[in-house]
Length: 331
Ligand code: P6P
Image (cartoon, helix red, strand yellow):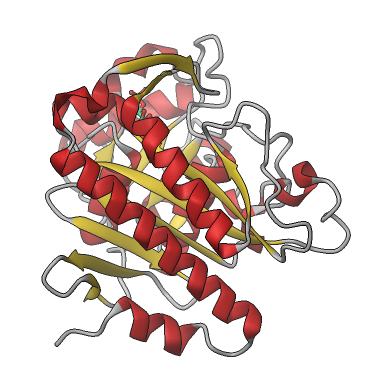
């Protein structure tokens, strides 16, 4: 019988009461993920239907967005954790004045893909609450990603998977209805150092800065240009799907800043997309930057701030930094 998530949590998070509370919160998050999974499987065709409200991205909420937000808010309540989600217009929800931990979460990332049956996900980050910032929920979440105690994402695809780190490497767990829980699928994922694929929305090419265009041009030129090989391209348009593929077989993902209105810092959110993905990728031996600065070192200037995001095979992420630092160099 493969090792269970429970066994992993008991061995990785058992040093003190705080760690045990984080383990319990991860169990509650898993319970919420199974509710979302079951709704996707059984929920019929209205899951992608719009409800009329908009979230902070300006996206119209879908039925499943609201169900996921409620399910994960309940998980935070059951954990006694503060809660801040991408769907929250007003800001963080204080659930427990004396809470020691907080969850920043995108309850349903990629919901525009529901109607096309593409993998979607939930991305979460667990942060400490210090006495200094406990009084103001907003300051609780205004901390850099390096402070994360745990991070993960659920992938609602052909299988329900949990990609998780509690600072002890990145591990993949598979939901097994037969087993009635999550079983370990891959212990200690390692991202291949060399990238053979890149992942970017090429339709934004004309909006990128010169150095990003130069970098992508060289990828497209392959062996006929300055690069040592030809490259493949994969782009799902669902962050958890692209991130999971890169964790499994290497590659590099880019969502750069671009000239479009509202995209000067790219599209992805620092708090509940870039930071958790960056922790998972670094724990798997990869790298994650905004092009030049380590994502986990970025001090947030707002709760829903966006950041340019580059992550994946470490040598490729570093190469992009060299294109930006010296656009004329053939990095
Ligand atoms: P674009 C999905 O809506 C999402 O937030 C991420 O999951 C994904 O990586 C990105 O947006 C895709 O954005 O502009 O390429 O459609």
